[in-house]
Length: 249
Image 1 (tube, rainbow, N blue to C red):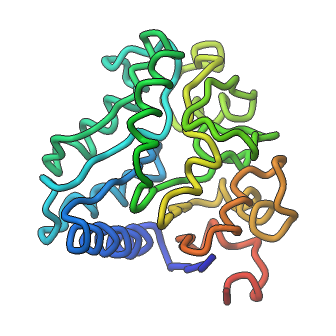
Image 2 (cartoon, one colour; image 1 turned 90 degrees about the vertical axis):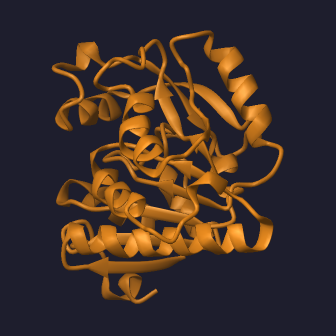
């Protein structure tokens, strides 16, 4: 895993977008198309804004898969990740092939249908973030490192639900759904490359635990250290608790 630290979030976002765009262009050049996995959340917004402005990507040849979604949330809800992806990636880029998790329908069937399509071949690049509790997608600690299922229905822990309130998606913890659909850990690791975008001081402790502690289900994003083509993009705030040795990797 490569760790890159930038002075601020805008420069982090631009560099991550450059890396992601290169992966997408390379996949299109070699295979005629690119398959991506997209994360959501406040921390991903500058990155997606920078990525969708890249003029050299033929978005008509890009197929997108959705990383996670709350069970029971309609796509009209302000917190809907489907709505987020439409507004911040699908529509600005002009992506016509995408697979959203319609989790206000039967979640078991949604996991089966989208997972079956995803399993046909690996993603070329996955964009991910890391939660304040160290989660990867909605795989909260202790995460399941073993299941081969592409998507899971999971219960969200208290720390994860509080983060959603803190980011402004809900007014109170009581409003945050207790369950979600998430791409599994093993499925995320099947991506040929992973671009992890993790800015802000509130993520610093999770970054330290995941990238300097043990690789463990108790720190789900720590598993990214086992993937040979992961690049972790940090700003000075999110990297402030890391040792110099880690930053040099």
